[in-house]
Image (cartoon, rainbow over the protein chains, first blue to last red):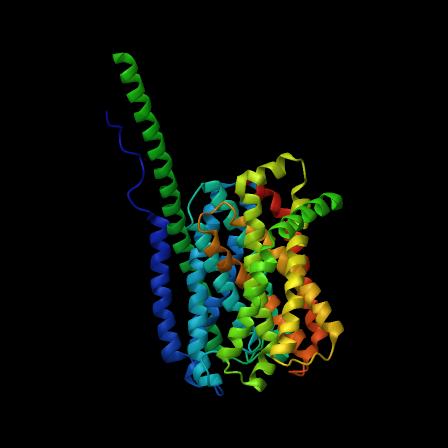
Length: 251
Length: 222
């Protein structure tokens, strides 16, 4: 006896995600136009200033993504909400990409500006790297397998521990001003030209929309995976019951 | 709660006293790492002196993963964790007790290691008070974070490899803070070591609170 296939959608797209995806494409095209042809060179940083159009939005979205992971983790520990658990996991995966992008673009920017790809004495670099490695650990915990509830609980505790780093990284250039090459906040120090500042803000908006788009898809994939697993289990139980009934009927 | 914590701590320390794992395996391992650093740096005394603080605390980081793994394995064998829960001891008391036991063992290793750097690296301690305060405060944080993450990986098959991946990045602030404080105490770098104790104390408090709050969930679920 075969069971009917699970009634699950064939893809994770929807009208909303298509609009968001199109907005990201238009946004990135506009950023390229503004970043390379409209925003002027910086007096001190010359052309390397253009790196902040990717670097700063990536750093901000790293904070956002890992903060969402922390909230999702707390909600799992508090309410045992599967929805929040999936949000935490999805956001962590996307956050790791943003965090990696922040480190890579920062390094590329650091070479012409500080004359080095990596500066161990810079507290913000070091704390960001620690956060990145911690979240790699979070994903390692997620991939360990075993009971779903136990995995979610383990990952949630790691997510909360890692989140403690976020305010430290954000405030580090102010707290340890003597131990950093990093400039103060690009947004609040008022040293950027108008078009440069505008393009950077546009970058933050575009990256935010991209985060929403990828979160929606990643969440739906994870949800469907869970439904499929549960469906498979139900199918297997139904098959065993049918077998038992058939053998019981035969005896 | 404190009485229960003390009971758990003395239980773990008695097991250690009878098995002598720390003294027969962990202390020699720490000494070996110290010697290997000497080989790696080609016995260059000025470089060794300059790097003593960092090498000392890196060794403690390695040792802490062993101590935590040992502490975790005590509870995972023969279903001892379930028995501990059934004994009616509150999870925060179990957490505090196990953290105390790990801290005592780490402090013992630190004393031996300190003698090692004085003898092998010719380190000249200028501020013993700062050295003891750093060891004490840093070890509280290491033990608390280690005990929490040890419980987190307790039920996992590959826990020996997962624990260092999780624990070492979490301990990075301790490595930075304790190394700076030791730099001051050993006179190798001109920094204010006492100011770094604040970071270590903050780290310790956060991990003790976090551990006491979440240890119960981990103990029951994982």
